[in-house]
Image (cartoon, rainbow, N blue to C red; front, side, top):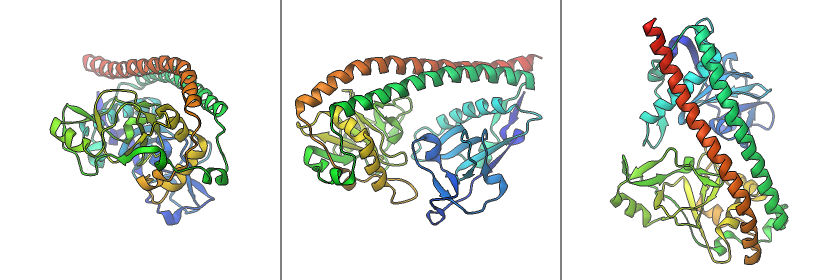
Length: 383
């Protein structure tokens, strides 16, 4: 048995909050960036909204524009629903809430795969509500949800280990370098452009995408400390060569996400050729800096604050080339940078092991979810 999403739940779209609504007090406005990155600060407002736009602890949320995803609001404080996010109100007489959460994640993953290659992913409301999900009897729904909840818990445990490793690495960086923290101290440092051979961003025109070929990366592929290649676009050879004339990353360059979720940083640690769209900036350091040191300098708390400050010029955060060039840079002796890099290698090996475990668990959980949903359909058809 299957059912359309619109038949098992109500999907309430959020309000269009404007920058003029933003205040320092009031309720948090839940934007997509707050769901995808817990470090992003909330804008707040005292503006009154209908009760259906008030998000409460445990509510399911679906982002349906730009970034597609399914989330649970796990804050103690009520939030206000921004546009491009659905608040999901399940009909619990026909669908278990936890089951619906997992079914929605599977449904959104399928929708996203159909939109692969689009410059701006956007789900049509009518098509979304008409999307069919497996709907076994409630006891079977609860059994499936319990299995998938347990799988999520194992994945979360790996994420907690990785977070602890991240904290350890940040402490290692601070122990090696006297990182300035005040505005005055940072203001006395030289600017990044003085220690970069090239600072640029990716292709500004819409690239001609293909089914395979050379990888075309965007901000979603740039994670702190790694390139996420699980969802990439491609371009053909001619388009690759055209884009590469502007920006062709190589090993040791440093990439920074500069649109939407701004400020994620990683060093290029591969020789595989790829190109970028404009949502990623590339910094090629001079020989006075190692790529590893530059990555961790840009990830340090004082520089992340600087990045956040200069990228909040509009409702959609953007980091442009000029502010990147003007970022302060501490330039320690090259020997000290390499010593840090040597110590970091030991931590990195441990981190890579746990990243591999988490990736494997995530893949197994996805296979488990697909199998559970397919099995539930077959069981009910046979019955």
